[in-house]
Image (tube, rainbow, N blue to C red):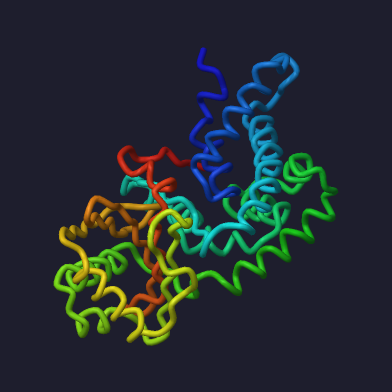
Length: 287
């Protein structure tokens, strides 16, 4: 008989990843959770799935409170760790949206408990009672936190849900413009108020603050192509949506895009090599 931890591993990883925004931290949480599960008297566990989610949530909260302090000292902007995903993740629209870089970046603006409650309620649709047990809060408090977190995220997440076909079409236009390095082509695919955020972690060159405006962003992207010897831009599935992988002069970057009305409104560039170790095997996500 398969151990429940193995059966639900992809779900547990998804819970931890959405709470932490880091696959490496999520894997550490799963390791810690497995050790705790190994000491549990299974005969006393009526619902293994709920019990395991509770363990992972508590371990994720502990980890989140620790890493939140270290992220305050991070060099430049901190972005979630991108995950290579298979196209079928996009078939679960709610899951794909919840693991998108755009939404994970918004979740970074929540406190640890608010984030846990939001993820467990809005993504995994857990009953308030189970969330209360997992977070150590009363049911009444969880309801209030859920409402507050929902409003907070709604005010900051992408306003329009874009179909995957539209996202793919915009990504292909963006790819073409990147490969040619033509300023006008780049400007045509970018929204006037586009914002580009890059994460180099102080380990590689990257802009340290968000870059605003179509002309500034387009010039920066066009110049990046011209300054390197080798430049390859390819389409990949990252975090449940079409995105871009860049390889130039021996360095790799990922580019995730938020799209509205056929144009790019947000560009998330991850260059920190410590966050780019999971681009070869698709991550297993579920809910």
